[in-house]
Image (cartoon, rainbow, N blue to C red; front, side, top):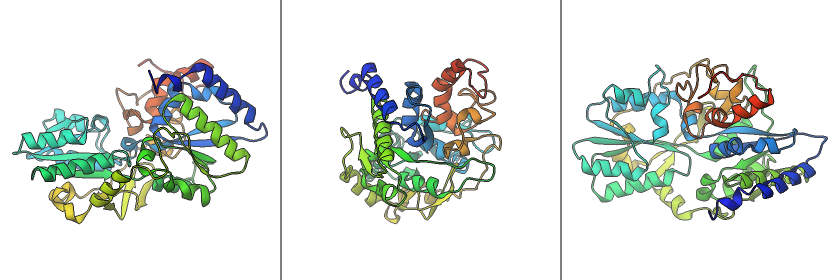
Length: 387
């Protein structure tokens, strides 16, 4: 399959692994964060960590939009969905994320709320068009990748004159989260995060380009290499990061040249700039309240803003105290460090968002990594049962 098989070639992977082993300095360690959940899954699925020298460590980041959404916003969505006139539509991963009281959108649906899963923002517009007697609220989440489709849906709804369509906006920004991770000291009792560079997100970078990462290279002296999602993409990016560290360089490099340009998708950027503006602050699961880290609809589109139309007031809610999603999202702990992992928390009975989302670190470790660690006999939390 063109553009896939060549990036999964085993012989080429062995060559890159040999180059990494050859260029890694034995007298030091390397720690790189892959920000995006797609990279986390590629690393787990293809066993990339097994191909790295012992002194090269990958740190899983918070780049999963479902994982970073705080419990309070899930509660908001459930309250919206319970209104008799509302049809709440959203993406599938969100349906099973636990709310503050042990519920979820899926459980609310089972209890009678009109909640529907869609595959695109345009599906939400189609439902609003077909059912004019329903107030259709699109529960929009995601990083810069999914923000343009939300803006497109809004514009199409306006063109069609739909007055029963609105957006519950939860779009967040990648560079701000990366900066917050670097600026935030470790909490008492938690290990510090020693990040020497980032594997930059792929899909996000197709939209925002390379420039937004420059501050990490120039101000923080942390190299960033934007990488695709195939195993050879990730391995090559790790090799490029090692070379930068060895040469004491801190630059933004682009491994994913087949999709990412320096300027990004200017058309999408312009569309988002027209529709959205920065929120003063927004709560992230694992990172807390972060200023200027999320988007809301501009006042010109207030009619389509579900928070204004339905007077949504978010009530802060705490995560399950036994759940380690927060430290895992900050890169301070691994999934197996959570005492719920593999016992109370499995994909069938998720206690935290990291186990729910297809891009979550816990889901990746459950699906791929636990078997590898079990085989090594080094699993801190032993494999307890098969999925």
